Length: 213
View 1 (cartoon, rainbow, N blue to C red):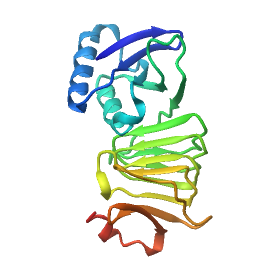
View 2: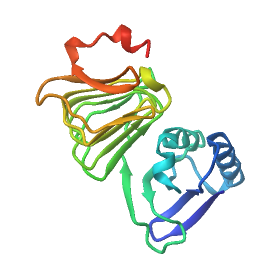
View 3: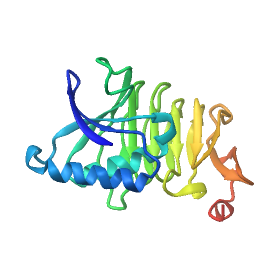
View 4: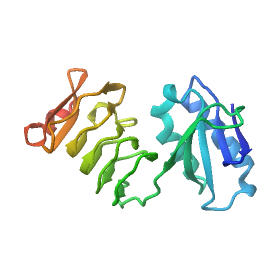
């Protein structure tokens, strides 16, 4: 079930637990179409997806659908909509997309912030502990990456995670996860090989083989 809830945090789009992402996207489309006259282009709303941990891989596509209606997602919230107080939330970093559809973020991404994009993400800066990236494609960090990086949520195992210093809390590529880190201050690449995430020095990776994953 998809519905809006007004709280002291502002207007929240609540996406109830679901079995099919396509049905959830359809409900979101219907709800936003019904409320089209209520919004103006550029309005911001918060997003709460029930059973967040189960559906985290779907969030880039959900936000992409919301953006098709000219709306921006300001925060991703965690908790239950019936609670008077949402348990926690992360502020969405709003940065422009390049002509290729890649999201380019030229700043440090700090704790409590999240980048969500349906394609590739490039960060020119550091990804601090407590920050998160959810990308449909690959993620490249020109700096130190200490937060959570979820890549390949649309692209699958062909996605890679690269950083100048890969010290992440968690790396997810498609449905595979690891808590392993790269060598300190050595540019590293996380990719899927033989069904598991491995981390290699960037100059030792065969990207042709990665693309066959």
